Amino acid sequence: MATTSALSSLSSLSLHTPTSRLTSSRPTISFSFLKRPTTLTPLKAASSSDQSETIFFEDQNPEITANAVFDPPSPPEGFVPAPYFDEGADETEAEIATAYEELYGPAYSGESMLGKDVNVMDSKMKKGGGGIGGQKPKKEKIRDGFEERVVQVRRVTKVVKGGKQLKFRAIVVVGDKQGNVGVGCAKAKEVVAAVQKSAIDARRNIVQVPMTKYLTFPHRSEGDYGAAKVMLRPASPGTGVIAGGAVRIVLEMAGVENALGKQLGSNNALNNARATLAAVQQMRQFKDVALERGIPMEELWK
Image (cartoon, rainbow, N blue to C red):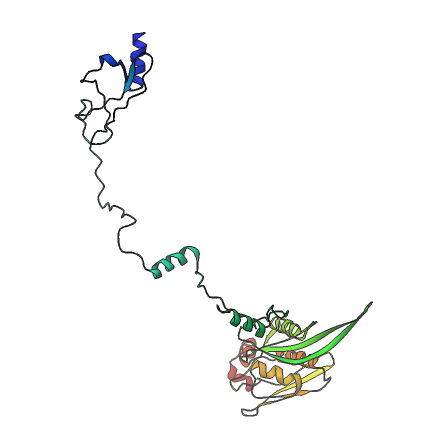
């Protein structure tokens, strides 16, 4: 029985003694985890029926840890301790903004495209055809170096079971005036939408026009499309573009400055524009012909 009580006393780090046997010299036990020992404050427990109290051991110089030496490992060569987060100068707002953009992308400036003033925003939305008046917002033009020119806009109808469907057909010519030109045609319920669709269709059908250093054709050519037939002739510098209708528009958008053109068949604008492209596609440069024949360019005119 005495052995069991002694084990329980040691396991709980406490000593159960009667109150009458307590003297000034108390047995002590202390535990040290750092250089300086940790001191425990004595606490008194509530008295029980056997007149005993619980006391934690304490001592300033215990014999168990008297010879213990704290020897931490030495740091390696070139070791630089990390600075604390509150050391050094404060970061500027520009540095904070740059670090934020590197992590999360460009930051919001706080100002929208329409501005901060409500009245200015309303006026800009009304002028731009925004949603305040019930109108659809305008689409921005494609900026790829090509210029657009409308050749013709006609109103067409389609007869269906319930009546007639009214639409608009637009013919648009696009070109960069550097030898690239295209013709497009499309239909829509509105004129603006028809022109936009025609411009997209023209960009899908770009044709390269062969030209000399005098910005004219290398030789004469003829092309036809449907009932339309177009004749093209080179001209001397200073002549200008002498042609009419859709032929003139196609040549100007291609960048031709000296040429002669003539419509020999139908007056249909779409067919004449496509006939012009057919005539242009039949042309070839002098260097290409000489390369095919395997002779120098000087022998072409012999």
